[in-house]
Length: 173
Image: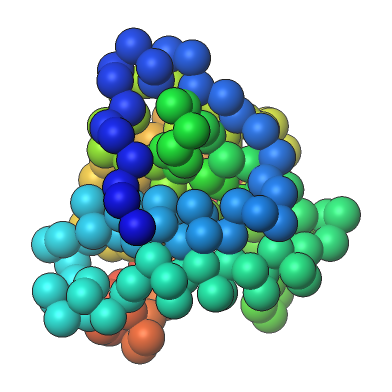
């Protein structure tokens, strides 16, 4: 499969934020893994990133999309027929969550950093609601973004065994 042509910066200003559809699973898999490779190159081994394929991610996304409830919010950002990112929130997971709503994920391609796409996605899936999230430790860009949006580190941590033992910190607002 040929990769789509790169999105021009001018096209980013016209990015469409829209609800996800069942047909988006392959594109979600591709953008998710592209974002991992851009954001986690210093956190994950090359071997781990090589095993995390767009196809395996698309399979997981197809399953996720089939299991969404009305309480979940999932938006994608699209420009030039290419997904640039996504955000997802839903009912809190885990024992004794600090808030009822959790931000499960927000990823935006590096080319779209600084364009406001991440902010629009976050606003679309959370608004100003109280919520919490987990952010990879030693990810200052993401941590600063969340802090600008009213989230603070509450001291809780979690080791991600399936993510090469990386540490996540919980942020709450």
